Length: 205
Image 1 (cartoon, rainbow, N blue to C red):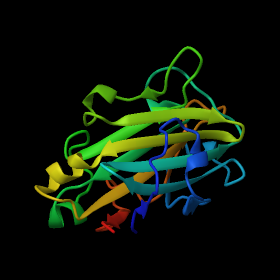
Image 2: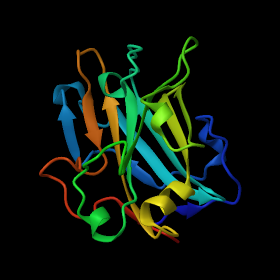
Image 3: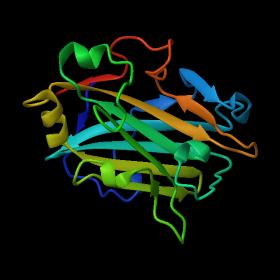
Image 4: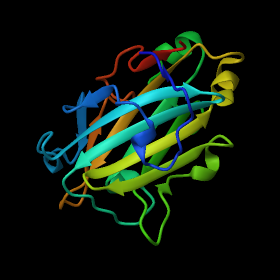
């Protein structure tokens, strides 16, 4: 995959009108974890996403179509409706063969649930994200949307120079009326035996 080049930077507000059509649609995830019966198929929940570059930022947009959006205000997106984005910018083979070790260290985890009137987006450990990272996660008429901007200098720092590639994975947590959500993965969770080398790789345009 290749990030698209945007003509203008999008506002990181969860309103995706300033994005072109999102290029990656995920009606059926590569892997379902958690309470699998909490997801009955794409009519229950599916999502679209895209990755883009502009200036000094990498942008990620996720648009979730969900018939029921449930929150519990815990701050842990995997216990409610929410999105988890994992980014691996390690150099060379360390990136290609990584199995998701060292989250919030070598592996960046950006996870959030839709904001409410009383809470902004519940981003998990936002204080530990690279300085300058911006996150929005808001409810929409058809579900919710998450938008993230990550400084590209973080990618450069991980690779010790101008970045060449990174690996991305996205999980959408779908919670309806059961206690735990189903976790719907774009690519198999890197921490499981279902993963494979280089999954979700994006190369610099």
